Length: 446
Image 1 (cartoon, rainbow, N blue to C red):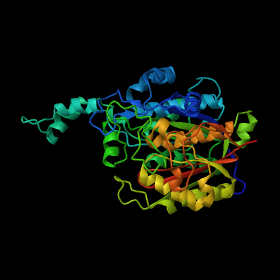
Image 2: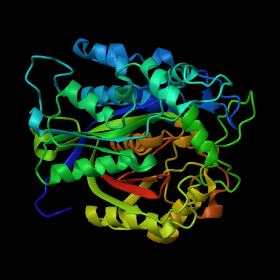
Image 3: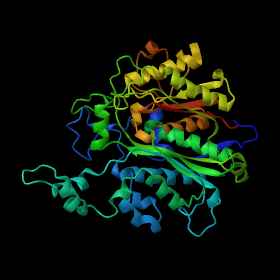
Image 4: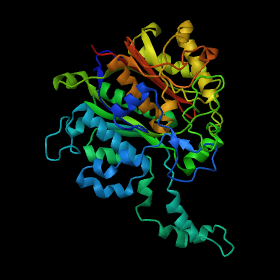
């Protein structure tokens, strides 16, 4: 950390996952060792290699009950990813005990709007299949083929005039900043699963250089849709789950027999706040963001995304984060890795852990959440950050599911029950499709 820069605390966490909204249902599910993976019901997924995902149940999620009345009309132009981001921000703000325009209009905000930033990781939001199908149906030639000229002439007019506003990646941050009146520095990062972690790093730097007192930071995405699942299928990332199977045992992080992952809906937002602001208002602190590091590996095929040889590059992000936090590897008491069950990425992560922690990698506790919450795209690293902060605050490690024989990769990820632990520092590390890695050091605040 730069000398003289303010310390940055996590004062609010707002995860959204297949367990529901907020940290309480997520933490209970993780500690109880249950999974939110279930059959997909939003569309017919029978044509894919897996028809299960960690989806958010309708009874857990109603966007109109979350946004303030003044913003409810805008829900018409919210794609699923935007809804998740708005819900996560709402939950984080309440978790931090902040007053904003979105929680109490007309009441002075806790953080001056021009000192409140926002950085959100987003995916490349796919258009709703039903909307596109209705428009494309009118753009056919007499023999039923797609006609580009007819698309421009008669097809596109069948889309709502505000159609594109539902699917631009920057619209997650757009809605969140409007609702909570965040007028400070804002940015959108689209680097696959690393996006949320990179956004947290961006917020950390903004606060350290004095351009904001607090930031809403994280990521959100749902790949549980036709385009999201199709790309993951082409990338050969999905585990094969036979029709009728529950899928709760499909994801095997760091297991030699692992064959892929399962997708999820969700993500999370953190409230990052200067030490002076947090202590001045008597806020609860979950953890300190003590260090951040990022790296990019050589990933020629971003569709296949074979990162099996990227251990050195992932290790570089870890080393940068440790250096930024001014802590040595032996000060790290647990790691929240990507732990996706995708063999090539697991192998690279395990290689990175061995490079940085040496022999300790075989006994250093890992927190693997993919078997329970799935892989939530751009929200994956943000969801992991919420869990990492909760681990530090509670001095507890949640349960691990499924994996057996992780010692073959030289790491400690075998199944076990939740347990108490002394956690001084926890590292959250996520590598995304395309080769980006974000690493965050979270330190306990006495």
